[in-house]
Image 1 (cartoon, rainbow, N blue to C red):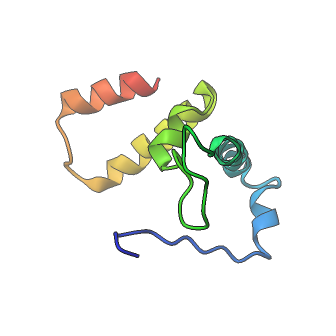
Image 2: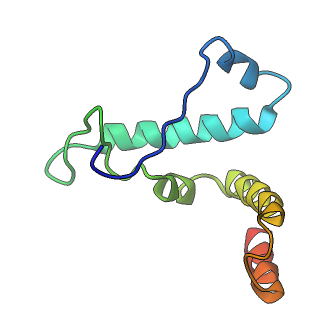
Length: 105
């Protein structure tokens, strides 16, 4: 890679467990993510975009995908981020945190 990247590895035998019963939030978010990603693959062709490759699909960074997800899923993701943010320590002012929470809700 010529740029910093993140690699996410799943144990393929455990993936079906994430999509049944115990993790409905993961199932919902993953399904929406897959739907949005698939739309980008299908639309990636000249003259508007470059063809997708095994390294890059246009408009598939996290912000692009989340911004086009349903409001319900965006809210779900936002609430999880707010919950995790409590563990980050003093990362912002009380007013900024309240504003962010207001945007999520």
